[in-house]
Length: 421
Ligand code: NAD
Image (tube, rainbow, N blue to C red):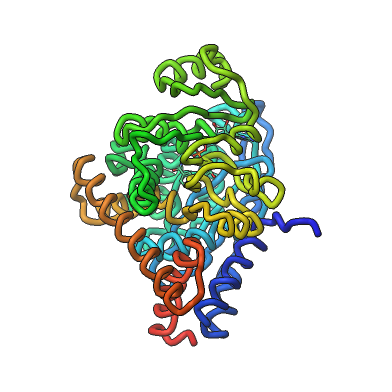
Protein backbone atom coordinates (compact mmCIF):
# COMPACT_ATOMS: atom_id res chain seq x y z
CA UNK A 1 0.00 0.00 0.00
CA UNK A 2 1.30 3.48 -0.90
CA UNK A 3 2.15 5.65 2.12
CA UNK A 4 -0.10 8.67 2.75
CA UNK A 5 1.89 11.87 2.18
CA UNK A 6 -0.88 14.49 2.09
CA UNK A 7 0.10 16.80 4.96
CA UNK A 8 -3.44 17.46 6.19
CA UNK A 9 -4.30 13.75 6.21
CA UNK A 10 -1.08 13.16 8.16
CA UNK A 11 -2.05 15.87 10.66
CA UNK A 12 -5.49 14.28 11.07
CA UNK A 13 -4.00 10.82 11.48
CA UNK A 14 -1.65 12.04 14.21
CA UNK A 15 -4.59 13.69 15.96
CA UNK A 16 -6.67 10.49 15.68
CA UNK A 17 -3.83 8.40 17.13
CA UNK A 18 -3.43 10.74 20.11
CA UNK A 19 -7.22 11.01 20.62
CA UNK A 20 -7.44 7.23 20.78
CA UNK A 21 -4.63 6.92 23.36
CA UNK A 22 -5.94 9.71 25.62
CA UNK A 23 -9.62 8.80 25.04
CA UNK A 24 -10.44 12.33 23.94
CA UNK A 25 -14.11 13.31 24.12
CA UNK A 26 -15.72 12.49 20.74
CA UNK A 27 -17.28 15.94 20.26
CA UNK A 28 -13.99 17.70 21.04
CA UNK A 29 -12.19 15.30 18.68
CA UNK A 30 -14.61 16.04 15.82
CA UNK A 31 -14.19 19.81 16.36
CA UNK A 32 -10.41 19.47 16.36
CA UNK A 33 -10.26 17.41 13.14
CA UNK A 34 -11.10 20.41 10.93
CA UNK A 35 -10.13 24.11 10.88
CA UNK A 36 -12.71 26.50 12.33
CA UNK A 37 -12.34 28.96 9.45
CA UNK A 38 -10.83 28.65 5.97
CA UNK A 39 -10.61 31.77 3.82
CA UNK A 40 -9.60 31.76 0.13
CA UNK A 41 -9.01 35.15 -1.49
CA UNK A 42 -8.30 36.25 -5.06
CA UNK A 43 -6.73 39.66 -5.29
CA UNK A 44 -5.04 41.94 -7.86
CA UNK A 45 -1.42 43.09 -7.81
CA UNK A 46 0.37 45.32 -10.29
CA UNK A 47 3.44 43.84 -12.03
CA UNK A 48 6.61 45.67 -13.13
CA UNK A 49 5.38 45.94 -16.76
CA UNK A 50 2.18 47.71 -15.68
CA UNK A 51 -0.09 44.67 -16.11
CA UNK A 52 -2.27 43.48 -13.25
CA UNK A 53 -2.20 39.83 -12.20
CA UNK A 54 -4.71 37.95 -10.06
CA UNK A 55 -3.23 36.01 -7.12
CA UNK A 56 -4.85 33.41 -4.88
CA UNK A 57 -4.15 33.26 -1.16
CA UNK A 58 -5.37 31.41 1.92
CA UNK A 59 -5.72 32.15 5.61
CA UNK A 60 -6.78 29.31 7.85
CA UNK A 61 -7.75 29.78 11.49
CA UNK A 62 -7.56 26.28 12.91
CA UNK A 63 -8.67 26.93 16.48
CA UNK A 64 -8.92 29.99 18.72
CA UNK A 65 -10.13 28.54 22.02
CA UNK A 66 -6.85 29.47 23.79
CA UNK A 67 -6.31 32.85 22.11
CA UNK A 68 -6.07 34.58 18.73
CA UNK A 69 -4.82 32.57 15.76
CA UNK A 70 -1.05 32.56 15.23
CA UNK A 71 0.92 31.43 12.22
CA UNK A 72 3.11 32.41 9.30
CA UNK A 73 2.36 33.41 5.73
CA UNK A 74 4.15 31.42 3.01
CA UNK A 75 4.75 32.55 -0.56
CA UNK A 76 5.15 29.52 -2.79
CA UNK A 77 4.35 28.65 -6.42
CA UNK A 78 2.91 25.29 -5.32
CA UNK A 79 1.07 26.49 -2.23
CA UNK A 80 -2.00 24.36 -1.50
CA UNK A 81 -4.92 24.82 0.86
CA UNK A 82 -4.32 21.37 2.36
CA UNK A 83 -0.72 22.25 3.25
CA UNK A 84 -1.90 25.47 4.91
CA UNK A 85 -4.58 23.54 6.82
CA UNK A 86 -2.02 21.02 8.08
CA UNK A 87 0.39 23.74 9.15
CA UNK A 88 -2.41 25.61 10.94
CA UNK A 89 -3.24 22.44 12.90
CA UNK A 90 0.42 21.99 13.87
CA UNK A 91 0.54 25.67 14.95
CA UNK A 92 -2.41 25.01 17.28
CA UNK A 93 -0.62 22.10 18.96
CA UNK A 94 2.67 24.03 19.01
CA UNK A 95 1.21 27.08 20.80
CA UNK A 96 -0.66 24.85 23.22
CA UNK A 97 2.36 22.68 24.07
CA UNK A 98 4.41 25.85 24.67
CA UNK A 99 1.49 27.08 26.81
CA UNK A 100 1.40 30.49 25.13
CA UNK A 101 -1.97 32.26 24.79
CA UNK A 102 -2.56 31.64 21.09
CA UNK A 103 -4.62 29.33 18.96
CA UNK A 104 -3.27 28.19 15.60
CA UNK A 105 -3.43 29.59 12.08
CA UNK A 106 -1.47 29.72 8.82
CA UNK A 107 -1.58 31.57 5.52
CA UNK A 108 -0.17 31.27 2.03
CA UNK A 109 -0.14 32.95 -1.36
CA UNK A 110 0.39 31.07 -4.63
CA UNK A 111 3.23 33.04 -6.23
CA UNK A 112 6.85 32.59 -7.24
CA UNK A 113 8.89 35.06 -5.17
CA UNK A 114 12.11 34.03 -6.94
CA UNK A 115 10.80 35.49 -10.21
CA UNK A 116 9.39 38.68 -8.67
CA UNK A 117 11.21 41.96 -8.07
CA UNK A 118 10.87 43.99 -4.84
CA UNK A 119 8.01 46.14 -6.16
CA UNK A 120 6.01 43.08 -7.21
CA UNK A 121 6.69 41.40 -3.87
CA UNK A 122 5.51 44.53 -2.06
CA UNK A 123 2.34 44.73 -4.19
CA UNK A 124 1.49 41.07 -3.51
CA UNK A 125 2.18 41.49 0.24
CA UNK A 126 -0.07 44.56 0.47
CA UNK A 127 -2.75 43.03 -1.79
CA UNK A 128 -2.96 39.91 0.38
CA UNK A 129 -3.36 41.95 3.57
CA UNK A 130 -6.10 44.08 1.98
CA UNK A 131 -7.90 40.88 0.98
CA UNK A 132 -7.73 39.24 4.43
CA UNK A 133 -7.78 42.40 6.58
CA UNK A 134 -11.06 41.61 8.33
CA UNK A 135 -9.86 38.10 9.27
CA UNK A 136 -6.57 39.11 10.92
CA UNK A 137 -5.60 41.44 13.76
CA UNK A 138 -3.82 41.47 17.14
CA UNK A 139 -6.84 39.95 18.90
CA UNK A 140 -8.10 37.87 15.96
CA UNK A 141 -5.25 36.17 14.14
CA UNK A 142 -1.60 37.26 14.18
CA UNK A 143 0.55 36.49 11.08
CA UNK A 144 4.35 36.05 10.87
CA UNK A 145 6.99 35.17 8.25
CA UNK A 146 7.38 31.67 6.86
CA UNK A 147 8.79 30.08 3.69
CA UNK A 148 9.92 32.86 1.29
CA UNK A 149 8.58 35.72 3.41
CA UNK A 150 10.81 37.77 5.71
CA UNK A 151 10.92 40.82 7.99
CA UNK A 152 10.68 43.21 5.01
CA UNK A 153 7.48 41.50 3.86
CA UNK A 154 6.15 41.80 7.43
CA UNK A 155 6.99 45.54 7.40
CA UNK A 156 4.94 46.08 4.20
CA UNK A 157 2.08 44.02 5.61
CA UNK A 158 2.11 45.99 8.87
CA UNK A 159 2.09 49.27 6.98
CA UNK A 160 -0.87 48.17 4.84
CA UNK A 161 -2.83 46.98 7.88
CA UNK A 162 -2.17 50.26 9.73
CA UNK A 163 -3.27 52.28 6.69
CA UNK A 164 -6.55 50.39 6.53
CA UNK A 165 -7.29 50.81 10.25
CA UNK A 166 -5.71 54.29 10.53
CA UNK A 167 -3.74 53.56 13.70
CA UNK A 168 -0.45 52.09 14.87
CA UNK A 169 -0.92 48.41 15.66
CA UNK A 170 2.51 46.72 15.74
CA UNK A 171 1.15 43.64 17.55
CA UNK A 172 -0.87 42.80 14.41
CA UNK A 173 2.09 40.88 12.96
CA UNK A 174 5.35 39.39 14.28
CA UNK A 175 8.78 38.81 12.77
CA UNK A 176 9.00 42.54 11.98
CA UNK A 177 12.26 44.50 11.87
CA UNK A 178 13.30 45.56 15.40
CA UNK A 179 12.90 49.22 14.30
CA UNK A 180 9.15 48.63 13.78
CA UNK A 181 8.51 46.78 17.04
CA UNK A 182 10.17 43.44 16.28
CA UNK A 183 11.82 41.50 19.09
CA UNK A 184 15.49 41.04 19.72
CA UNK A 185 16.45 37.39 19.30
CA UNK A 186 13.69 36.54 16.80
CA UNK A 187 16.02 35.77 13.91
CA UNK A 188 17.69 32.67 15.34
CA UNK A 189 14.96 31.74 17.84
CA UNK A 190 13.76 28.63 15.97
CA UNK A 191 17.21 27.07 15.93
CA UNK A 192 17.97 28.19 19.49
CA UNK A 193 14.75 26.60 20.78
CA UNK A 194 15.72 23.44 18.89
CA UNK A 195 19.13 23.44 20.57
CA UNK A 196 17.49 23.57 24.04
CA UNK A 197 15.52 20.47 23.01
CA UNK A 198 18.76 18.87 21.79
CA UNK A 199 20.35 19.51 25.19
CA UNK A 200 17.41 17.98 27.10
CA UNK A 201 17.12 14.98 24.76
CA UNK A 202 20.88 14.36 24.99
CA UNK A 203 20.50 14.20 28.80
CA UNK A 204 17.78 11.55 28.40
CA UNK A 205 20.04 9.45 26.18
CA UNK A 206 23.13 10.23 28.30
CA UNK A 207 24.89 11.61 25.21
CA UNK A 208 27.81 13.94 25.73
CA UNK A 209 27.17 16.65 23.13
CA UNK A 210 30.86 17.53 23.00
CA UNK A 211 31.51 14.04 21.60
CA UNK A 212 28.48 14.00 19.31
CA UNK A 213 28.48 13.89 15.52
CA UNK A 214 25.59 15.72 13.88
CA UNK A 215 24.16 15.69 10.34
CA UNK A 216 21.86 18.53 9.27
CA UNK A 217 19.59 18.50 6.23
CA UNK A 218 19.03 22.08 5.05
CA UNK A 219 21.19 25.20 5.27
CA UNK A 220 18.48 27.89 5.40
CA UNK A 221 17.38 29.96 8.37
CA UNK A 222 16.72 26.92 10.59
CA UNK A 223 19.63 24.69 9.49
CA UNK A 224 22.28 27.38 9.34
CA UNK A 225 21.64 28.68 12.86
CA UNK A 226 21.31 25.13 14.18
CA UNK A 227 24.81 24.43 12.80
CA UNK A 228 26.22 27.60 14.37
CA UNK A 229 24.61 27.08 17.77
CA UNK A 230 25.31 23.33 17.96
CA UNK A 231 29.00 23.90 17.34
CA UNK A 232 29.53 27.22 19.16
CA UNK A 233 27.31 26.72 22.22
CA UNK A 234 27.02 22.96 22.60
CA UNK A 235 30.51 22.09 21.35
CA UNK A 236 29.20 19.36 19.05
CA UNK A 237 30.69 18.43 15.68
CA UNK A 238 28.61 18.89 12.51
CA UNK A 239 30.01 16.33 10.07
CA UNK A 240 27.42 16.61 7.28
CA UNK A 241 25.13 19.29 5.88
CA UNK A 242 23.07 19.67 2.72
CA UNK A 243 20.84 21.97 0.72
CA UNK A 244 18.57 21.47 -2.28
CA UNK A 245 21.54 20.62 -4.53
CA UNK A 246 23.12 17.99 -2.27
CA UNK A 247 25.46 17.82 0.71
CA UNK A 248 29.00 17.59 2.02
CA UNK A 249 30.63 15.36 4.62
CA UNK A 250 33.81 15.57 6.67
CA UNK A 251 34.71 13.04 9.37
CA UNK A 252 36.71 15.77 11.21
CA UNK A 253 33.74 18.13 11.32
CA UNK A 254 32.83 21.04 9.02
CA UNK A 255 33.99 24.61 9.61
CA UNK A 256 30.94 26.88 9.78
CA UNK A 257 32.56 30.08 8.49
CA UNK A 258 34.34 28.41 5.58
CA UNK A 259 31.19 26.54 4.61
CA UNK A 260 29.08 29.72 4.76
CA UNK A 261 31.65 31.49 2.56
CA UNK A 262 31.57 28.67 0.00
CA UNK A 263 27.78 28.78 -0.02
CA UNK A 264 27.85 32.56 -0.48
CA UNK A 265 30.21 32.23 -3.47
CA UNK A 266 28.72 29.23 -5.25
CA UNK A 267 25.09 29.21 -4.07
CA UNK A 268 25.41 25.75 -2.54
CA UNK A 269 27.16 24.01 0.36
CA UNK A 270 28.49 21.64 -2.32
CA UNK A 271 30.79 24.50 -3.33
CA UNK A 272 32.83 23.68 -0.19
CA UNK A 273 35.76 21.80 -1.65
CA UNK A 274 37.42 20.52 1.52
CA UNK A 275 34.76 17.87 2.06
CA UNK A 276 33.34 14.81 0.39
CA UNK A 277 30.17 15.33 -1.69
CA UNK A 278 27.12 13.34 -0.61
CA UNK A 279 23.46 13.15 -1.65
CA UNK A 280 20.56 14.13 0.59
CA UNK A 281 19.54 10.48 0.85
CA UNK A 282 23.06 9.56 2.05
CA UNK A 283 22.93 12.36 4.62
CA UNK A 284 19.79 10.88 6.18
CA UNK A 285 21.53 7.52 6.56
CA UNK A 286 24.87 8.73 7.98
CA UNK A 287 26.48 7.08 10.97
CA UNK A 288 25.97 10.03 13.35
CA UNK A 289 24.58 10.53 16.85
CA UNK A 290 22.08 13.22 15.91
CA UNK A 291 20.18 13.79 12.67
CA UNK A 292 18.50 17.18 12.21
CA UNK A 293 16.09 17.41 9.29
CA UNK A 294 15.81 21.18 8.77
CA UNK A 295 14.56 21.50 5.19
CA UNK A 296 11.35 19.90 3.95
CA UNK A 297 8.45 17.68 4.95
CA UNK A 298 8.27 13.89 4.23
CA UNK A 299 12.03 13.23 4.24
CA UNK A 300 12.10 10.20 6.53
CA UNK A 301 9.45 7.81 5.23
CA UNK A 302 8.55 4.12 5.36
CA UNK A 303 11.06 3.68 2.52
CA UNK A 304 14.17 4.86 4.42
CA UNK A 305 13.33 4.91 8.18
CA UNK A 306 14.99 1.52 8.67
CA UNK A 307 18.24 2.95 7.28
CA UNK A 308 18.50 5.86 9.74
CA UNK A 309 21.53 5.26 11.97
CA UNK A 310 21.32 8.28 14.30
CA UNK A 311 20.35 7.72 17.96
CA UNK A 312 18.40 10.95 18.06
CA UNK A 313 16.31 12.68 15.37
CA UNK A 314 15.54 16.34 15.98
CA UNK A 315 12.73 17.55 13.69
CA UNK A 316 13.58 21.19 13.08
CA UNK A 317 11.59 21.25 9.82
CA UNK A 318 7.82 20.87 9.82
CA UNK A 319 6.62 17.34 9.13
CA UNK A 320 9.94 15.71 8.07
CA UNK A 321 8.96 12.28 9.46
CA UNK A 322 5.84 10.51 8.14
CA UNK A 323 3.56 8.56 10.54
CA UNK A 324 4.76 5.22 9.09
CA UNK A 325 8.39 6.26 9.59
CA UNK A 326 7.51 7.45 13.08
CA UNK A 327 6.44 3.91 14.00
CA UNK A 328 9.60 2.39 12.50
CA UNK A 329 11.89 4.80 14.39
CA UNK A 330 10.00 4.12 17.62
CA UNK A 331 10.29 0.34 17.20
CA UNK A 332 14.00 0.76 16.49
CA UNK A 333 14.34 2.80 19.73
CA UNK A 334 15.57 5.88 17.88
CA UNK A 335 14.47 8.90 19.89
CA UNK A 336 12.51 11.20 17.55
CA UNK A 337 11.77 14.68 18.90
CA UNK A 338 8.58 16.07 17.30
CA UNK A 339 8.56 19.15 15.09
CA UNK A 340 6.04 21.14 17.08
CA UNK A 341 8.32 20.97 20.11
CA UNK A 342 11.70 21.28 18.33
CA UNK A 343 10.83 24.28 16.12
CA UNK A 344 8.59 26.06 18.64
CA UNK A 345 11.27 28.70 19.42
CA UNK A 346 10.12 30.91 16.54
CA UNK A 347 6.53 31.18 17.70
CA UNK A 348 7.53 31.52 21.35
CA UNK A 349 9.65 34.58 20.53
CA UNK A 350 6.80 35.78 18.28
CA UNK A 351 4.62 35.66 21.38
CA UNK A 352 7.26 37.70 23.25
CA UNK A 353 7.21 40.20 20.36
CA UNK A 354 3.40 40.48 20.52
CA UNK A 355 3.56 40.94 24.32
CA UNK A 356 6.32 43.58 24.06
CA UNK A 357 4.37 45.49 21.37
CA UNK A 358 1.23 45.46 23.48
CA UNK A 359 3.16 46.72 26.51
CA UNK A 360 5.30 49.17 24.52
CA UNK A 361 8.24 47.92 26.56
CA UNK A 362 11.14 46.03 25.00
CA UNK A 363 13.56 43.41 26.32
CA UNK A 364 17.23 42.69 25.62
CA UNK A 365 18.28 39.68 23.55
CA UNK A 366 19.60 38.05 26.69
CA UNK A 367 16.21 38.41 28.44
CA UNK A 368 14.44 36.99 25.38
CA UNK A 369 16.76 33.98 25.21
CA UNK A 370 16.46 33.27 28.94
CA UNK A 371 12.66 33.35 28.73
CA UNK A 372 12.77 31.15 25.62
CA UNK A 373 14.92 28.59 27.41
CA UNK A 374 12.42 28.41 30.28
CA UNK A 375 9.43 27.86 28.01
CA UNK A 376 11.10 25.21 25.83
CA UNK A 377 12.53 23.32 28.80
CA UNK A 378 9.08 23.28 30.45
CA UNK A 379 7.41 22.03 27.23
CA UNK A 380 9.99 19.25 27.00
CA UNK A 381 9.38 18.25 30.63
CA UNK A 382 5.57 18.28 30.12
CA UNK A 383 5.96 16.02 27.08
CA UNK A 384 8.23 13.52 28.89
CA UNK A 385 5.99 13.48 31.98
CA UNK A 386 2.93 12.63 29.90
CA UNK A 387 4.83 10.00 27.94
CA UNK A 388 5.89 8.39 31.23
CA UNK A 389 2.35 8.57 32.65
CA UNK A 390 1.04 6.50 29.74
CA UNK A 391 4.06 4.22 29.97
CA UNK A 392 3.15 3.43 33.60
CA UNK A 393 -0.32 2.32 32.55
CA UNK A 394 1.40 -0.24 30.34
CA UNK A 395 1.29 1.58 27.01
CA UNK A 396 4.67 2.77 25.73
CA UNK A 397 4.04 5.83 23.52
CA UNK A 398 6.42 7.89 21.36
CA UNK A 399 7.41 11.47 22.34
CA UNK A 400 5.18 12.89 19.57
CA UNK A 401 2.13 11.29 21.18
CA UNK A 402 3.18 12.63 24.59
CA UNK A 403 3.42 16.13 23.11
CA UNK A 404 0.09 15.75 21.29
CA UNK A 405 -1.69 14.68 24.47
CA UNK A 406 -0.35 17.68 26.44
CA UNK A 407 -1.44 20.04 23.64
CA UNK A 408 -4.83 18.45 23.07
CA UNK A 409 -5.73 18.32 26.76
CA UNK A 410 -5.16 22.10 26.98
CA UNK A 411 -7.11 23.00 23.83
CA UNK A 412 -9.97 20.63 24.70
CA UNK A 413 -10.14 22.04 28.24
CA UNK A 414 -10.29 25.63 26.90
CA UNK A 415 -13.13 24.61 24.57
CA UNK A 416 -14.91 22.93 27.49
CA UNK A 417 -14.56 26.07 29.66
CA UNK A 418 -16.05 28.11 26.82
CA UNK A 419 -19.00 25.72 26.69
CA UNK A 420 -18.26 24.53 23.14
CA UNK A 421 -19.02 20.94 24.11
P1 NAD B 1 14.74 28.21 4.24
O1 NAD B 1 14.00 28.41 2.97
O2 NAD B 1 15.52 29.34 4.84
O3 NAD B 1 15.80 27.00 4.05
C1 NAD B 1 15.44 25.76 3.53
C2 NAD B 1 16.73 24.96 3.27
O4 NAD B 1 16.37 23.67 2.80
C3 NAD B 1 17.62 25.58 2.18
O5 NAD B 1 18.96 25.40 2.53
C4 NAD B 1 17.31 24.71 0.95
O6 NAD B 1 18.37 24.66 0.03
C5 NAD B 1 17.13 23.38 1.63
N1 NAD B 1 16.43 22.41 0.81
C6 NAD B 1 15.42 22.60 -0.07
N2 NAD B 1 15.11 21.45 -0.68
C7 NAD B 1 15.93 20.52 -0.15
C8 NAD B 1 16.09 19.14 -0.37
N3 NAD B 1 15.36 18.48 -1.26
N4 NAD B 1 17.02 18.49 0.37
C9 NAD B 1 17.79 19.15 1.25
N5 NAD B 1 17.68 20.46 1.49
C10 NAD B 1 16.76 21.12 0.79
O7 NAD B 1 13.69 27.62 5.25
P2 NAD B 1 13.79 27.59 6.85
O8 NAD B 1 13.16 28.82 7.39
O9 NAD B 1 15.15 27.20 7.26
O10 NAD B 1 12.78 26.39 7.16
C11 NAD B 1 13.17 25.03 7.04
C12 NAD B 1 12.12 24.17 7.74
O11 NAD B 1 12.00 24.60 9.08
C13 NAD B 1 10.73 24.26 7.13
O12 NAD B 1 10.08 23.01 7.28
C14 NAD B 1 10.05 25.29 7.99
O13 NAD B 1 8.63 25.16 7.97
C15 NAD B 1 10.65 24.93 9.34
N6 NAD B 1 10.52 26.03 10.30
C16 NAD B 1 11.26 27.17 10.16
C17 NAD B 1 11.10 28.19 11.08
C18 NAD B 1 11.91 29.46 10.99
O14 NAD B 1 11.78 30.30 11.89
N7 NAD B 1 12.75 29.64 9.99
C19 NAD B 1 10.18 28.06 12.13
C20 NAD B 1 9.46 26.88 12.25
C21 NAD B 1 9.64 25.87 11.32
